[in-house]
Length: 202
Image 1 (cartoon, rainbow, N blue to C red):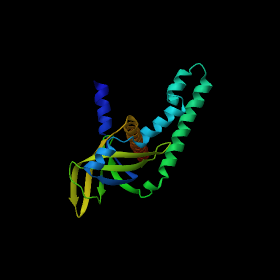
Image 2: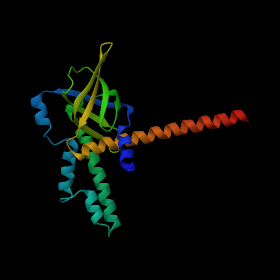
Image 3: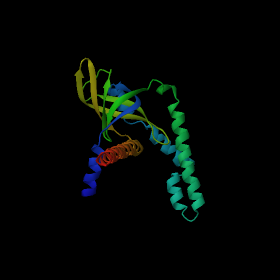
């Protein structure tokens, strides 16, 4: 139970960040089509599945445990294919209008300022680039759950609606990565202040 509660706390962790993204309001008809489409990452996964002969490189490398060199080569191939596919998708003209934006993001949703006029309960398609290694491009569906207008600026809160495990895994991996970075920065800052305080006492 403690593990589950700990994971839930980590999923609730919110991170202020700058991310390249854009958003598009979907009509009900567009949403009904998009919700049944294969997402970018699911498409990548299917391609890797077919290229590796019916299993992912990770699955094959696990089966090839008797030959560590083959296992390692397959893992490297998997990483390179992900990188090439990700870079190729990111260069598509459909995504050239992404701009770097300030967001407050968690593993389950995000908050950001938007010029899109929408209502609570409507759906957006959010395209974002996550600076992972390799870089990950996501096209996520999201439901508008919060709207606040201040000084003519509209802030939206949205809940992600993942269409495949790969989408959710990428967002969770990014949030955990940023969480670790934030904890390390706070620890370094605390250590630095403690060292300066000790020097003052000398």
